[in-house]
Image (cartoon, rainbow, N blue to C red; front, side):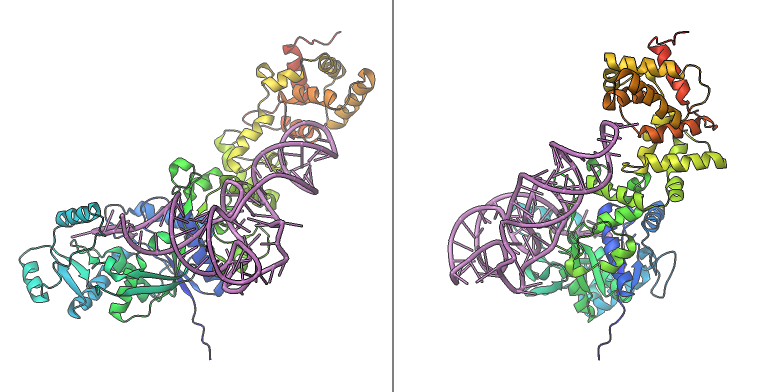
Length: 504
RNA sequence: GCCCCUGUCGUCUAGCCCGGCCUAGGACAUCGCCCUUUCAAGGCGGCAACACGGGUUCGAAUCCCGUCGGGGGCGCCA
């Protein structure tokens, strides 16, 4: 009979800043496994480093995870039957278990001053030896230690590790990994300030929270033997481990700020969709069996497979992330596109806080058109300047070149003349007029349309005119903080500037 | 220095475990063409990789050894 126990995984970040994409990927892989297997995803905050942990950071962390869509079943805010989920609130537990080891003789008090240890470590390193604790305090009896403690001495607690032998484990992504105990030494499990050391608290927590699979970064691989030793000391069944490779910057060094945006929060502010970021992150070290690349979170949950996770480090590629983001933006319904665009447009002062129905409708169309080819929502205000900014007095070089030819001047002159008496304008009219110009001047194609575009937009490139003209005509009738100029206004303004007064 | 992990196109990767189907597949980027009213989008096509050296084998990207490169760790940080 095979009884498959529910999978329990956890993400255990320390609240020391914004959540990094590398950590986000770790969280994602844990979450994917839990969701796929109907397991439990636990969020645990590792805030035992008093100097670096801040409450505010914890808030950011939860927000980022929520935004990514990685919801947890148990955690500091939601609770659960294995709580508390904040290490700073579990201190009692750690002391209790440390005491157990002390009494069983598997751990001991160490009175060595930090400076001395530091000196020994440096010396060992300089001599090319592995810096391993000497074991000086190993034989101080518990009784003696207690006396010294009472006398006011400070001591850390160390785990007694056998000095020969091998620790091995079967890593789900790497296979058999083994370490020589000689190189490990007795690790500190409780610091002299009473706070548990990382390697100790994770083990206690993972064990007590009944974590079945520990999926984490490769940087933890060399902590694993120490942790295994602790499971052994307690006689506990260790979880299964899976170590994910690192995420690097373009120069193959660890991803950092100088590589650009690296925190989830930064991508959120740029207007990268959470589903796109998840999609991209999932492809760092994993790939689905079929070649499909644009996947929704639901599809990821369905397809994810730890055994398809590869072992080598991956370089974070912004281009590909943005490409995926474009694909996910395309998938969005128009209302959603508008909703997500609004904050950027408001911040740029292009639209007000209040949005009347007519403006909203117009914006929906405009956003739909201008989002085409945008990498992220933050690029939108820039794209909108095509509509809101008309600056014939400061043409870019390319645009200026386009209208400098004789044929271009002919075309522009014709347009100015043919629109001179008009008070209304629309695309049909434009099409008819350009048809006439074509017939009368014999100028066609690029030679014809390119100058027209420059006159209407003061740019060399942008939306297709059959989309652009209706858009500005409708926009000109609305009340935006920065008004949209109509086609006729544009033509006349441009004409005045280049001294093309229509003849009377 | 020592220990551990890792090495397929510029990048993410498939293939590797279970050698032949691999003249190594896909995607991003790039280049070219098509479409088009420029640009973009889209379509089509091109360039481009098994780190190196030894084995094993009829046959190796795939198995073994070594070299070199990259990363991580060696904390009273997590």
